[in-house]
Image (tube, rainbow, N blue to C red; front, side, top):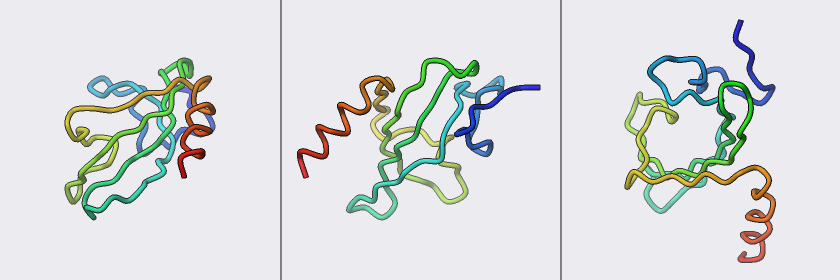
Length: 97
């Protein structure tokens, strides 16, 4: 049986799929943009063994019926922040608003 971290959302998990990116995923926080079809998706990801945890930030334009975790990022760009640096990034962003 494959193990999942407590925070892993099974409907978005590709950790044990042969053709996926093999990542555990949390439910995303979605930040709306000026374009109603585009959102900034922020989620926690980890390798199949639960190690190498990161916060992923990705700008997605969703097509109806396409799951968020299987959608290619706009401009083929995403940002991964290691968990040990994520709090520093949060503090920096908080200082901006």
